[in-house]
Image (cartoon, rainbow, N blue to C red; front, side):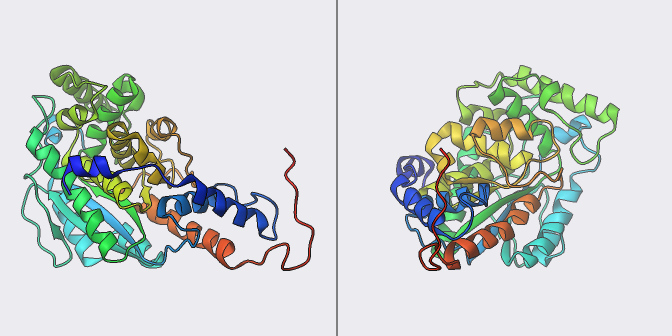
Length: 352
């Protein structure tokens, strides 16, 4: 699907089915709403998928891999060559998210959407839009055509995964320099100064953090992205990995399937998608709040509450994958536990 077709196809989740799922929860022989956000997540998934029979048995992790030209400004601890190494390791099943996904029974799909150099690996999905972005402190990170194409890579991947029978997708990324681009996106969309939204990423020194904040400020001043136009923000100070993830959120909504936000970078992509089409938020689940300063602010702007607060900053989709077993446990209660009526006990009554 094209970007325009996708945006036209997105409709809100089905509230009547969500309410039916809540009635199921309230009939189960346990304290009302005792599983908190997990009950809410299952009910929301029912509304997303248009069925009260919630089934998350097949799950995928889409990891969008790309390089960012802003690394020229000394905003990272490591060089761009690390993006290629980790992308190839994702293909081999030898990264943190791969180990966690194995435990969570999720399939990992590394997507080369913009790694600077050539990468090899039979499990890598070759979707390269460009060999990394341009240095956003000197001009737009991407052209309009590149931005559209990258968004459509994410959209098409979600369509493919839905056709393959996947029922929930976790988002992830790999791209040296992408906390800098995400900080620029967050600064513009939230209307906050770079100092409030820019953190140390993968372990910057104080000097490195100062360079990173300066790069974000320079990129915004140079490009003057329009806060009311998410596409303009993405093109000028975003990245190919952010665009792929934003497309995945849009595509997931169009396919009426839940998509799990990972951490700070994924949340920045989620907010970009939500600003393009507000109804897309109906299909998002927040997994955790990361240790980056803007992470909680982005989720608050989306109106979503995460399951976990574990101070995770690793990326790759690790936080999103960590939430999947929690959803499994919630689904086990929702789908198999007996009701008050079945065990002949007077049901709990709401206190309000």
